[in-house]
Amino acid sequence: LSSSLFNYLTDEHPDTFTTTRIVYTGGEPASPTHVERLHGLHPRVTITNGYGPAESMGFTTTHTTDPGVPATGPLSIGRPLTNKHAYVLDAHLSPTPPGTTGELYLSGDGLAHGYLAQPTTTATHFIPNPYGPPGSRLYRTGDQAHWDTHGNLHYTGRTDTQIKIRGFRIEPTEIETTLTTHPHITQATLATHPDHHRTPQLTAYLVTTDEALSPQDVRLWLRTLLPDHMVPAFVVLLDRLPLTPNGKIDKSALPAPQAVTTAGGRAPRTPLEEKVRTWFGEALAAPSPLSIDDDFFDQGGHSLLAARLTNRIGTALGVTLTLRDVFQHPTPVTLARHIETRLLSAGAPAPRRARPALRRRTPDQERSSS
Image (cartoon, rainbow, N blue to C red; front, side, top):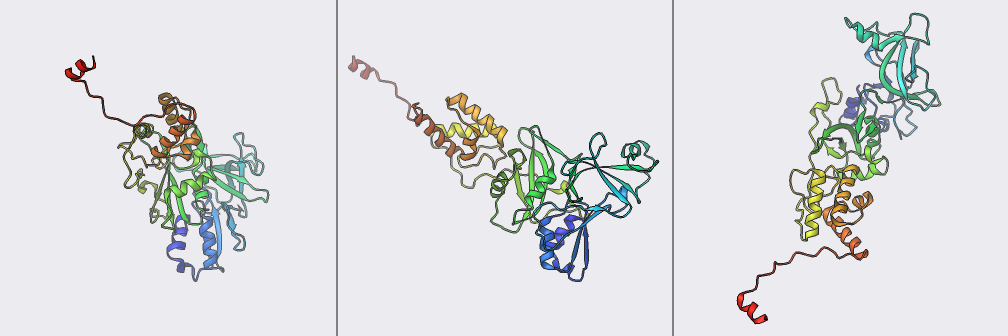
């Protein structure tokens, strides 16, 4: 079973495995949460996580999970089968030490001869094997992996699916694996969508077992585990992830994220709240006016946009704000209150509330005053 189909059957139709003795899963990174759940439901079922591209004829490496060991992290893809070989190499085709990520190369029995009528592609992906007998070849998988100190392989992602967000290279698999360690998240996948500035932003699509779990809860939890640039700007909760006919996640069918505005959000009540709300909208390029209760980060905000916001406020009001101020006061009303407190503590006059315009004196008033 592909990992997505394995997860689906474990969640929706666990009786499928009642008379099953051995289950192989592969094609996508395995979900530790689902493997542990199936072990709990059917302790006698043997679950094996396999890895192997079509160019290597089925599984090349396998790892049989231990039901007595809690699945607390990414599952290993194991060791090569008999007469098959795996190498983790750096850019110079030198082996990497345990714990160091490199590109995964395969060789041995079952390796394809190449791609039909595609000599250039064949020459690019099937190269001479410096670690085998003369005439043998290595297949360059395009997958990243590392060995652990016990001689097991760990898949860490694709070399061609890395995402660049705000100058950082991100491996989606790392975030997806972290998400599935949450006790109430059963499935997760990642995609990118442009924000209103046409800048790519991470979007996480999740299936959960807790209806009370909100996107904001997920983002706050992720911030305790991952750096800011790896926390998705949007979190979309789905009843289930769409699958292709062969059981893999159909990312083309994932809905575009929508910023969630606060229901019944209030309008600005003071000139300062009005200004801060306007600056929020400018930084986020919000298509419609926000309320003073809308959360900056729920609208797709991130540290780079928060820096723009603090710079805009500092220029306009002469008050120095940090990113921490925005994280701790993420709505226009709370940030306006914080700014007012900062101005008062610095001895600067707080922005005055709006008052009616003065009326022009009448000629009789002018004469009487003279």
